[in-house]
Amino acid sequence: MRLQGKNAIVTGASRGIGRAIALSFAKEGANIAFTYTKDEEGAGITRRLLEDEGVRALAVCADGSDEEQAAKLVKEATDGLGPVHILVNNAGITRDNLLLRMSADDFDRVLDVNLKSAFLLTKACARGMMKQRYGKIINISSVVGVFGNAGQANYAASKAGLIGLTKTVAKELGSRGIRVNAVAPGFIQTDMTEALPEEVKEKMLGSVSLGSFGTPDDVAALCVFLASGDADYITGQVLHVDGGMA
Ligand code: NAP
Image 1: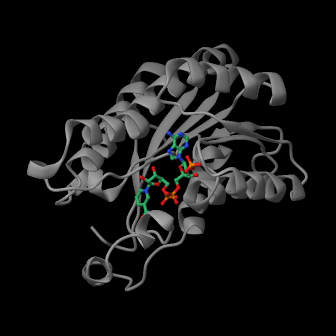
Image 2 (image 1 turned 90 degrees about the horizontal axis):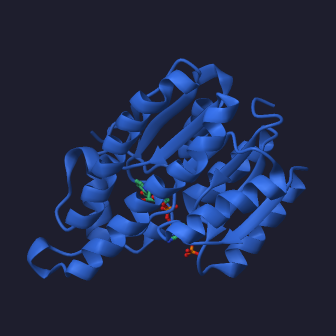
């Protein structure tokens, strides 16, 4: 029970990697407030799975890229669970297209959901974490943010931006006991990657040294480690979970 007595916010946990992170944290004893925006059914399933682990669970329909909603989420989590110790900025979307066909709206929306929400939620949680002189912030970036990927200028920019945010906030808040790290998954089997054409998946698989795609649990295991006391001397890092894709 490495996270016993801790309260965590996990964004985008109605399915996929976010749900796996929330559930793995709950199995280690953490209470969880998580967000979603559309997937009511998935959010209900996540909440029940968390409660089955015997922890407190709050499902909040909130888009963290809106400043008011971000502040309200942190208040609801604090009122409902107590002080927030762990923030996982996981919510993310794709709106893929080649540069010349990508609309400014699709660029902005991806940057807003994937990057701006992490900035706003980090800001909203920072004061409380500074007061308690303890906090763990984990930003779910991507290998695409490190290496780039054709057709994903918006997504790659948002994920690279998360790495810059991670390293900067780690420097600013380290002296207050707040650790900030980024996780860069490779190809993980979720609804997000399920939507890709078969030939794209096959090509990607060819670049994975271990020869298989990852699972949400592979990412969640690293997040549990980073959130736990075992990783207390790690901050400002980008850790890859990609089966050797890079
Ligand atoms: P997913 O299956 O599509 O799930 C995305 C989750 O985010 C859903 O719960 C979705 O719920 C929620 N969400 C979307 N927009 C939101 C918003 N504005 N506010 C709050 N929640 C929102 O995606 P995934 O594959 O699990 O990906 C999770 C994270 O890992 C993302 O940041 C993604 O970029 C990153 N990642 C994934 C892979 C991969 O291979 N799958 C690789 C590298 C990085 P609603 O639909 O209800 O809003």
